[in-house]
Length: 379
Image 1 (cartoon, one colour):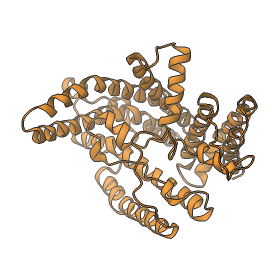
Image 2: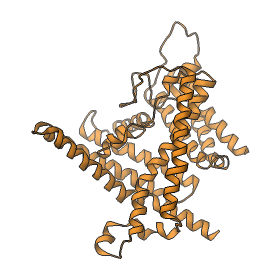
Image 3: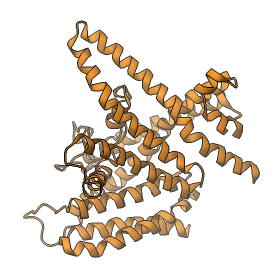
Image 4: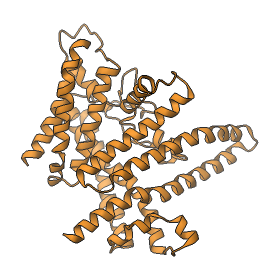
């Protein structure tokens, strides 16, 4: 419990130091860089102990700490962000800095993340609380009484061998052998999309808790500032749209800023060129994979290289779709019976997204599960 408190305190203090730094001049900000990173590192290293309070909380907090360190260093030292002057503000304004330092999407600013969820209303705090708790209740009931029971009923009991290295390969075995079983196919299909649900519901829980704390209890934020993380899954008819429109965009801004910095300052790629755009996409996915691998290594020590490989693979796929999908879209938009053709185009896209996830996700996740179950069996 002590280390859990250390993790929570150190991670929060890292953000507080960034808020202080944002109120200082650019030369003086250099003195705050080490405390921001060091406090974040201490909070991350102790984050595993939070799993004793709630399973999975340690990994979620670890991701949050690392992402906020990357975000705040980008704001302070790449963008060199300055707080907007206000006649109401005299001297330092920690609250104004907080609005930037805990806002990796930069919502409500001139650098707001693309495809941010629109805000249509400004609900009262009570109405916001009632709506969010109602949504959370629906998700909890759905998870506890529909999704999880159906998963257990369909696949229990599951052993480590169901996630063995052999089972990571599917299409090659389907063509060349050894034989692929019906159970294995069904498990793979369910597992290929189950990770989406787990991330969706986990982030909804976390966001609701933080939204209630900061907007309803502390009144540091307005309810409308806490926008939904995810878009509609119907928008994900290719992997570009999966990551760019459906999936949360919490880390898009900070990762892109560091990707642009590395592309321009280290690789010396010309500004605005196609090479720069492609390199930034790959750097963003590489950074995301590296951070996932760091969290996985710290939490379990199993399968962390798979994180880097899978996110890099997604980077290549997104880059490839950029070349292929746009010309195809233009072709469909200029032909007769456009609505019908676009519908078939999107249906084909949904099949493509599922096929890619069906093939790639087990290669990414099975190694972690096999390692974890094998360790449990040995113990």
